[in-house]
Image 1 (spheres, rainbow over the protein chains, first blue to last red):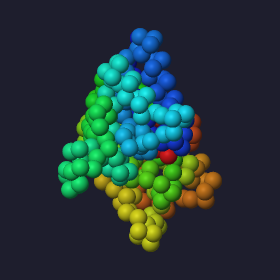
Image 2: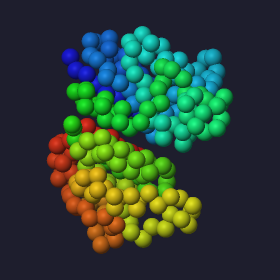
Image 3: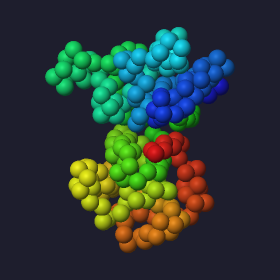
Length: 130
Length: 119
């Protein structure tokens, strides 16, 4: 059994990558592997935007990731710099930005630095980028 | 601590990949990763010393390549073939680097524990 770090850099709507990452995490866990964490970088951070509003008959990745994280307690880590560039702010980021009531990055997604990615890579057997 | 290969594939101003690659290189190196940086395909354009990104109001992130050595990032590998097919020469590049053939690049990549591609 192996432990995996998952790195998501592809945008949820511009690519299949974010959904493939979700399916990979699900399959790995169901088969007894462990996921050290999921790190969202570049346009991958867009999936952490809580304001996403999909039509009811379309694939909604945001709630899928949230449910998966709750079920298996896997950390969903979002690079703060990449997220802020794309208008995705946690409550803490919003306070620092002087817009304390406007934030869209909520748990289980966490706003973190690249140090968290490094810790994740150090703790896992291998990494896969989507 | 592990080794991390960061691969750049995009032109400097087509998107934000170049800036986010620099962020990743400097931060992961400062957290103790042994970082190697690769420039392949259109990524080799990031190394041109004749860039003038101010013309299109872009930040000159390629200037940060000069800081790599202060973070002990000394392995900078450039695809010889990518340079050649784009009519570029080593003398036009803004950082000291090693030119490698695709098979030599693969051999270097195999030495890294993890790989992240910015495209």
